[in-house]
Length: 78
Image (tube, rainbow, N blue to C red; front, side):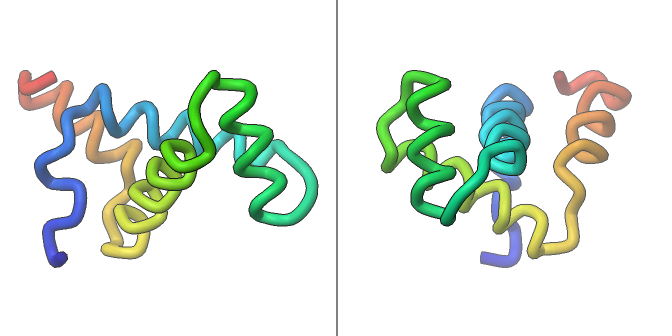
């Protein structure tokens, strides 16, 4: 798990960021907030939870998702 998210495309990472941003704006317990995110994006609860966990795993490894996406653009990979 040392390279968590390294195989994810920038588009996929953007979905993680989108879920995280909405999650931060919602109120309530974690489960309630995830359900609100799922409802707003038209996702299942399970998919919303997975995307949030992927975002959190990326952050836990010390990599900033936004910086990673910018790096992809600058290198021409995006």
